[in-house]
Length: 256
Image 1: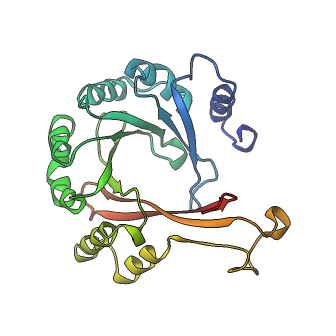
Image 2: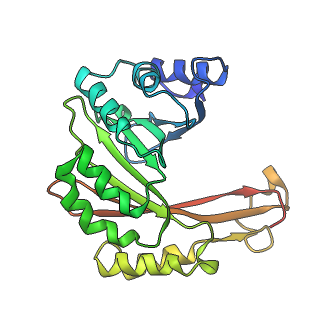
C-alpha cells in the first residue's frame, strides 16, 4: 500500500509501521480512508494501544501521520484534551485530516458513558455543549459510544462527532430501528433511507447472485456479507447536524 500513495511522508509512515519496531509498536492497526469525491490520497488513521503515551502521540506519531510537527497551540490543546479523558475511557484513534485539505488532527475517544459526554465537553470545548445537548439524547440506549473532535493549529474544536452501534445486526436487535426512528423524527434521516439502511444487512452467495459473483477470483463458494457498522451524528457551528450511516460488505469463506 505504501507504493500506492503519493505523499512521501505517508509512504514513509506505512513502511515503518509495516516493518515493526519500537517507535510505532503502540499502533495496533492502521486505517486508510479513501474519499471518492476528493483527491485520491487517503486519510490515515492509527488505532492505539490503551497505554500509548500522550506525549509520544503528540511528538512522534502525529508528526509521522501528517508529515510535520503539530503547531505549538495544537499540541498544547491535544495534551489538555487528553488529560481530561476519564480513566474509564481512552483515546482509541487519531487521524490526520491534511489529505482532505483540513489542517487539523482528529481525536476519537471510546468508552464514555452517556452521562459523561457533556461533562467531558464542558471541560474541553464548552461552546459545543449546547449543540451536543440537542443530539446526544438520540443515542440514549445505544452501545459502543465514540466521541470525536478535530483540533486545528489555532486550538479550536469546530467539529464534534458522536457515534454508536450495537453488537448485533438489525434483524436481531430492535434498538437499531428505534435509533433510526429518532433520527427520522429529528429530520436527520428520510424514511426511505431509514428503510434502506435497515434492509441492507444480510448476505449473498453465488447461488443468489450468479451474475455478479466473481467466480474467476473465489470460485462458487463463500459469502458476500453486508453489515451495518455504526451511526454518527456530526455537529459544527452554524450548521444543522448531519447523520451518517456506515455500511460494510466483504467476502467471507467461512460458514455463516
